[in-house]
Image 1 (tube, rainbow, N blue to C red):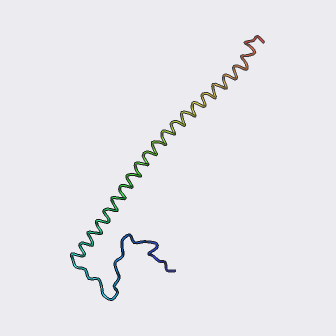
Image 2: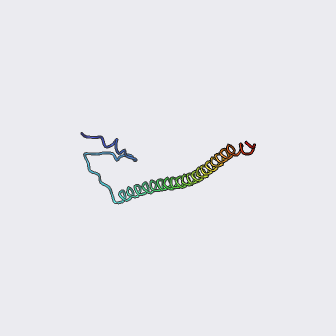
Length: 105
């Protein structure tokens, strides 16, 4: 099964024109210019990816900060809920037993 690799790995730049009858002949100057262009392209790509990575790292830090803040709030609310539940149960149990003794029954 032969796959079309141009669809799997699309080229980001224009492909060089194919001239099957004559081989490529580059001068040293043309080769240096081509290498320089390729290097500049790779530098631009690196810079773009570096900025994206820094942005994602910043977002990750912000998300972690929010997670900690929400966790602390949730933990505090859970403790407060248990305290109130305990207070309500104590109040109900003392009011049930204490209501009869307070009235003299």
